[in-house]
Image (cartoon, rainbow, N blue to C red):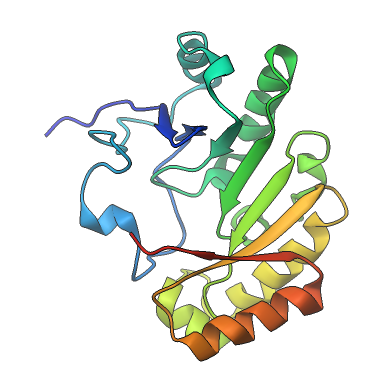
Amino acid sequence: MEKKMTILYEVGEGLYVNLTNKCPCACTFCIREEGDGAYGSDSLWLQHDPSYEEIVAAFKKVDLGKYKEIVFCGYGEPLTRVDTLVQVCDYIRSISDLPIRVNTNGLGDLIHGKGIEPLLQGKVDVVSISLNAPNAEDYVKVTRPKFGLPSFDAMIHFASECKKYVPKVVFTVVDCIPQEQIEASRKIAEEVGVSFRIREFI
């Protein structure tokens, strides 16, 4: 089946940006494993990573006045394309004052081999990071990152660094993990000094 190009899609009162299908993780609960589409979209699998020009063209077709936020989140890790993400944020800032959120696995530094947090300054209002487990061993079991055990500490470091550049940083967990792991994850968020949210498993 030919892949479509769903670059923008709606979830509630948010407009979501599907930048890429690339991701260094293979989470056991990932909605990509359940089908081609989610949240009312027929398919979030892309023919190719959309160019900046294609993304801008998609934005020009929507009424941003309908939404309360713009969220970078699709069938891939948006920070694999951090340079394009920053470009698009600049475009959004030029036409709207809607808050911008990035949903991420927090492995951007490992993906790019450098600290990318400063690039988000003035571009992003909220960074929401999938914590999903309170220690490296359980994290690897759940998220299956290609970087292995170092991924957990890298993700914690990413959250700590993001606090310097982004107004709000949030750790999230999915409610399908054991309750004791949820509470231990909450404690990590407190220690790092970021917000904490439990996401509903869909």
